[in-house]
Image 1: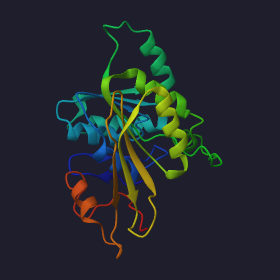
Image 2: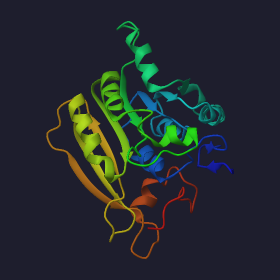
Image 3: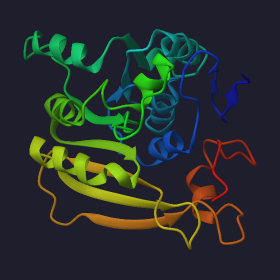
Length: 249
């Protein structure tokens, strides 16, 4: 598997089950940052690296359960210019929460921002590949655990950003509301203008939101060329002509 090269870092992905894709690109560019950021299920580490590039003062904790993905993430972090600001933990988010609970209030990390490209295919048959199944299915990280755990580790007024398809919007939104979040921004992302949104990037806030922003954008124009919005969004990350496995439609 050839590495995927961004402008300021490279993603080696020969071990991780899930490769660089459009979801992680969008989330890395649209998530709310901060000085302390938690990346849940970092995979190859691409999201953590994008946040490190966007937020020069940020210190990032990247949590990953899969040992194969950890191999790639560790290398990608170490070879990047942001290595001294990213801490990689080989553990599940559930175990991380247990460890967090056992830490004193003075020592417990309180994050400004939590980002996650979650395992959302909860209505699909699980993949026979164990690593890919963990990366893609909510059985490894239930929505309720993810939402309540993110709320728990955030500072007041912190932000929780994630990306998922329309099929699970209602279920996950319900869990976020139960956890205490309020929707801050919803990005409805279409592949092309004439199609319905294929994915959502959602930003929740641990705090009061007067009115959520509801925005719609397209990855490609009707003639299937890249949209000016997507090109501008990714201009600081992708090499010229890059699209990170962007779908045709």
